Image: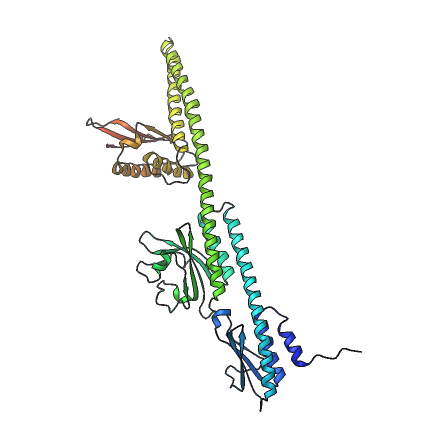
Length: 461
């Protein structure tokens, strides 16, 4: 015999708990209430739309503002989740009310289960996202790429329209240094929160800030605030150090962030900050290893190559003095000069190796080398750079600035000369000026084959 069909109420009650998606569960409740009571329209209004991101659920055909015919509260544990409303029937009976009470009670259980499932699913997504960020940051990304990775992953997890990272400015404000959006974020990067902003004290203090509507909140003062609605601004802080702030704005009119989303985003930001610190420590260790290796090479060059070249030069010089033939003495003299020039170039290379990698040049020697390296990209070959005397100790900042200006002009002139295959830059701080004072002399000579004298600039020390 075929199985007897289930009573409509029992079928509806069982059907309410078959899906763990909250929106689907609510829609099933509304549809079942309308079908069981014969009402033409049904709706469910939630008490706190921000908690689940849902406001009103309606049965198909229900108007936007239905008149109330019968209503019953839906409770999840001890809290009122919302109100189930029915209309569009001439007369609702007591049996309809009892049927609705049973459905509402079962609905409360189903909603509680759906909430737990949704919270667990959200936690799983955020945990996986945080793990992906940590893995990405520890695989060798640069600092800028690391911040962008955090912003992009957070935007996706939070279902935000943008993910941005702000960092402190020298003036005491905060500036957006990277952004991830669906569109080109170019006009967002560089946006600043000026000192004195009401929200700035919280951000610099490492406190999360939650905004209901960025466009109308008086604490928001940036030029792009009108684009956004609900937003979270979360500290990227580890070991008491504030790396920056992660902001996750949604579009105007989008649903607000739920308490669960806020909690998970705060936890994500904390873990991302730790990953950023670990990644930075890893980069520092790698840079230190590179520096130590370069320092070892520099020592080897100095202890082995330079000393051997110097000894060879002494041998040649001694041989030149004892040699009776003039042409041989001249040849040996040129060889000694070449050795001296080579020693100077090797010492310059040693100094370059001893500079911390990726650091901006600060001393005069390093800045001269930077200028000649830039010229090499235009010339197609590397200029020879020689230093004589204690360059770093004897040349003051003002004289160094004028020397660098003269060097740039000389290099620019040389780059425009045809047929150039060799360029030599000499900085001599042992020079004697025509008036007898100690000075520094810059000489730039090339082999362009013209009658021009080497370009020379000099100044008292």
